[in-house]
Structure formats: C-alpha cells, structure tokens
Image 1 (cartoon, rainbow, N blue to C red):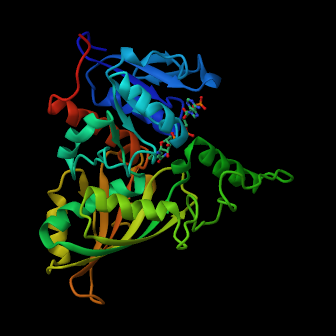
Image 2 (image 1 turned 60 degrees about the horizontal axis):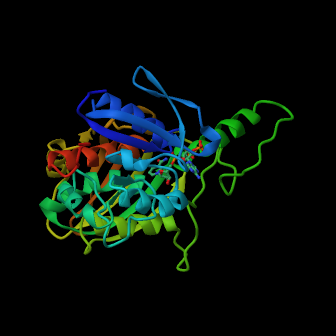
Length: 345
Ligand SMILES: NC(=O)c1ccc[n+]([C@@H]2O[C@H](COP(=O)([O-])OP(=O)(O)OC[C@H]3O[C@@H](n4cnc5c(N)ncnc54)[C@H](OP(=O)(O)O)[C@@H]3O)[C@@H](O)[C@H]2O)c1
C-alpha cells in the first residue's frame, strides 16, 4: 500500500461483495495507503485477503470512521440505513451497495460508463449509491444504443445467480445439490422461497401491491434515474441455479431505426462492453464464462420484426464484479479523477 494514498474501509468484508472489493482494489492498484476490513462482531479477527496480505476483520460498532477517506459499504440495507449517514458525517465518502439510498434525491446513483458526472452530487449526504446488479449490466448495454436511436420501451427477463443473495444463497444451492446425491440428507429451502437446485424461481425480493416484485421495480426505477426517466421498462426477475453471473434476455423498442449490424458495431466500441455474437452453436457468452471478468457481454443481437425498430439481445455479466464491487471501485476512481476525494492531511 502506498504512503500517500487514501484510507479505505470495506464494510461487509467477509461477504460475497466485500471479498470481491478487496480483490478489485488490489487488481486495479487503487491508490490506498490503508485498507481496513470491517464486518460484524461475529467476524472480529476473521482473516480476509487483500492481494498477498491478510487483513483481520474489525468490528463495525467500534471502528473509528473519522480515520478513513472512503468507505465501501456492503453489509445490507439495515446496516446502511444507520451507518452510511453516520460515516458520511464523520467525513468519509460512502459508496453504498445496498438499495437503502438508491432512490433518495440527494444521493447520486452511478454507473461510470453511463452517468459518470453524477458523482459530483455526493456532497449533500456524502453517499453515492451503487445500483442493483441487474440494472448495472443492463444500462451499460443500453446506454450506447439509447444515444444512437432513443429507447422507448424495454422488456427484460433476468436469470440471476444465487450469489446475488449473498453467501447464504450460494451455500443453499451447494447443499441442496449435494443432498440430491447423498441418500438420507435433506436441505430445506431457507434463503430462497422454493428449492433452488435443479429449479428456477420467478421471485426475487418482496412482492409489491401491483404484483411485481421489488427486484423488478428496482430495475424500472434505477434505469429511469441513471439513464432516462422517459424509458418505459418492464421486468421479470428470476433466480436460477447458477453460482455467479447474471444473464438477461432483453427486448428493446427504439424511436428511430437501428439494425442489428449497427447495434453490434456501436456496442463493440462502447466502454465496458464486449460483443461476442456468432450465429452458431456456442457463439454467445454464458454466465460461467463471465466469472472473474470486468466486462458486460452482449450476444444474440437480432432484429425483432414484431415491433417497429425492435432489437433483442442477451446480456451477461459477473454480478459480484461489474454488478457490485467493480462498479463501486470505478465510482471511487471517478471521484479521484475529478479531485473530489480528499486525502488525509
Ligand atoms: N451479491 C450481489 O450480487 C450484490 C450485488 C449488488 C449489491 N449487493 C448488496 O451488497 C450487500 C452485501 O451483499 P453480499 O452478497 O456480500 O452479502 P453476504 O455475502 O451475505 O455478506 C454480508 C456482509 O455483511 C456483513 N454484515 C451483516 N450484518 C452486519 C452487521 N450488523 N454489522 C456489520 N456487518 C454486517 C457480514 O459480516 P459477517 O460475516 O460478520 O456476518 C458480511 O460481511 C447487500 O446489501 C446486497 O444487497 C449484492
């Protein structure tokens, strides 16, 4: 860690997202002079890796946040509700991964490839929100197409991995899968509402009054806030028995004409996007291939002749990386590039 860098706290360091944050800070050589791993009291002393170093977790309740410049927060909404404003008031900029602050008018919601300048609105609460994993990969792929042909309406179905439900979600898929092969061992559904092994579940987060789920609502509200409030979007969010990597089948209706070839060319030149689109067996990206990668992959780009100016495509990304930890670190880098992150005196 450099002498003259930023003092960083990672809250939720033992979790799926927190561990990826440690990896990404190290991989991208984030200019940190100190990195603190923070979790609940249960994890005090638990070791987490930061490059070739091992850090011992500290307790959120007793850690002195006045001694850090940046806090990457990833410990769930109830922790964020209490702690993100408190940490902000102590002077650190908080980049918050939960859904708690995303819809607050005084909190920017940022995907650096899409609305990087929004970071400058952080100062009212000292919080910047990281969007939902499904929204991030979607808007990275939509933005360049919207710039070209103006999106009117999007219909999306998601295929979301169990790691999006935290480490308990991954354990549940692992245990249920194992129990199918070990006679006499049964694992009931706990984290998910029905069996997830060898199954798919059309239900993520709580139900809303109109019959949509909160996860589906988040994709609508967040796309409007980040990209364009005029875009109409409807989503069906589905949990699938994949450990890491979210996939999305996306249908888009544009105001102006755009061909599949044009869309492919535009996306090839777009930041954060990798196009892999061969019209043959295996000529597309699946979630197992995106694990550990930074990019949002776009495949199966084709014209939809059932609507005027319609396109369909398949979008895949690592939900723990671009969908969470990478996006958060990129937001911090955007702050640094704009001289908005102060260093210790
Ligand atoms: N997974 C994704 O794809 C994804 C994407 C975007 C956003 N997010 C959001 O990121 C957050 C974390 O998700 P995750 O998948 O990393 O969950 P996770 O694997 O379940 O990890 C949760 C982390 O929060 C810590 N924590 C929980 N309660 C705490 C408390 N009272 N005080 C201090 N630390 C506490 C845990 O520490 P202990 O080990 O000590 O319990 C652990 O480090 C959630 O808000 C989630 O919605 C997740």
